[in-house]
Image 1 (cartoon, rainbow, N blue to C red):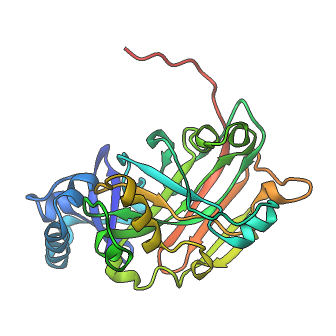
Image 2 (cartoon, rainbow, N blue to C red):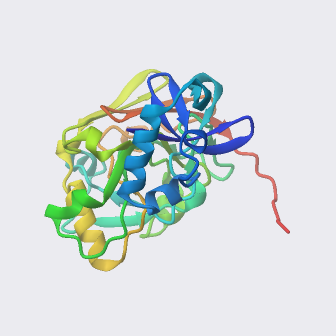
Length: 294
């Protein structure tokens, strides 16, 4: 099942995507939650109900995809976590040693961005880089999950771009600042439920910049698999429904080129994860305006 968060006529809700249409769950299944975070928190039974009701939907509940705006499947996750140096060829292109343990950082939820929305080139840096990745979304609250049961807590998968501001990233060992600029975590286009994917360690990741293929690698090359990532994280803290996990990027990032090939205004970055989906974002200049809310 393909789940989407979308806006139609200024109203945002969730739906099930079938071919070139989206079934509006607010209309087809009015008893279900109307946002993705709440739907996932309602448990596997709610997802099954959504699928059944989508099967029964008629024209009145169905909208053309061309008439809606797609958002990140989970627009406001509680946690956005990302693993670093998880592909050995990516480790080597930066001249680093393979990590003995998993290296984790968080991206702030303000970084979450739609699958086709613009990505800001920061006003404070020209070292903007791309990192095409497979992402998964947690579907069940969990702690101390052994690797052999980790598949039970994954709701589904999407494509993502761990957009990175390299100079800010390298200033501190935590990397959080350089990974968390607004708009720097585009996700989507849909949440593909885990039953549709099968083995997440057998998918191809490809990234293009302005039509030029820059990254191409199988998720089989991960140093730490999705299951190992869940097992490791849940030894420390609880994962909650809707948490988004970036699983690492392969070689081919712009910052590893000599000279670096950083992104600039007008560039288009396309990330494709085989069987999961494709996102594409244009780089735009950030409007560095002071904002102070009420």
